[in-house]
Image (tube, rainbow, N blue to C red; front, side):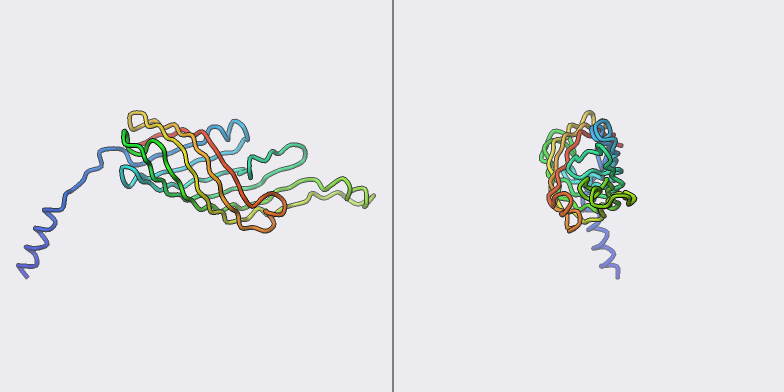
Length: 188
């Protein structure tokens, strides 16, 4: 028994203890989507290594392919995204060019007025908005560049492409989705 304790103790004493020399938590916000589309995208990122992290994001009023709400079209959608980031920068932790595979789930609906040709075929009938169920699972890949200022303030430019797996969404929109942003963040 003493030998086992001696071996375990010597093992733990020889394993290098690495203290985190940089902040590994980040909160972030896509300022561009808020300004342009009135869409809110907030996230949290955890750096578990100098050049690797996992992130979680919530997108409120998520738009597919930057589709507008002009006229009588309205999105009532929210998304949750889980991603892995691998950074190629060496100057600061979690900075430089990065690669981001992700999974995303969108839920909600999209409303619009029916086609005018259909309205003419049904005179006197009440006009009801056409709804598209936007619930879909999305898998994708992204890339971007992140600037890390003093391991506290973050600015990032990024883009991604994903594939949704909903027949109803593909019928009304497209199966391939693009997304981009200008993010700001804070590390702590």
